[in-house]
Amino acid sequence: MLDPSVGFTGPRSYDEEIGPYTFAPFARELAGCLPQGFDGELLELACGTGLVTRELRRRMAPTARLVATDLNPGMLAFARERLEGEPIEWHEANALSLPFETASFDGIACGLGLMFLPDRAAALREWRRVLRPGGQLMLTVWDRIEENPHALVFAQIIETLFPGDAEMRFRTPYELCDAAVLDGLLAGAGFGERHIETRRIAIRGADPRRIASGQIRGTPRGALIAARGLAIEEVVARVAQGLAAQGGDPYDGYCQGLVVQARALPA
Image (cartoon, rainbow, N blue to C red):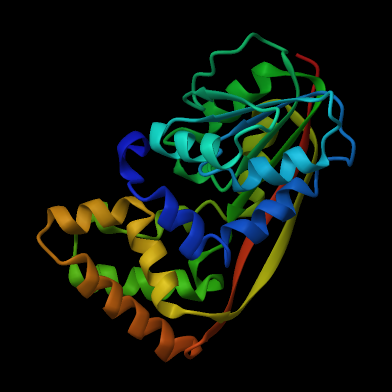
């Protein structure tokens, strides 16, 4: 697994190039799980560039407390800058070992982050620890890569360029997609009232070059590609050509994920 503390080298590319087509729509889907006017204490994990953070804050009462965390200092700094002035507490934190007291939050939100953690069961147990009984867990994960055609194109091209290179395998984020497996992980960590729904988001009129650039410059693969001696622009061009061949230029397609909700059971 890539070290998430060093991998994401392009927060702005992540946020502005691919974010509007994929991450931002799912940020809104996740935030929609939070009751409008929520007035408790909410913890966000793996906040990235703040796409989910912004949507959560919009749904919360002015007196509610929002704590946003990420392991990557670059992502956290970007999020803090873009949301400067908002009533948000920012913390650099590992989602597997949180620096918070037991039963200190009424809700937890994690957008497209759980699948990157090396021990998902341990992560969910840790999240349950900091939730108060009855507290709400909200998270999203990607569906299988075949239901995310833009990602499949990228994975196939990268794997062709780097055959057998485990670090360049792009399919991992799309492998925590079995609802039964997710349900079992949640149950084992002490969550009840579990609900898992599939959501599909249309991508319309996108620039394939911007999607390709965001997939590469805004993810760990950009640094890895450069370290292997390939020019980033060359790889971006190849991926953009593959996307255009699949969905046209401008690009039309879709992305698909799972929206998960559960409640913390009494310890």
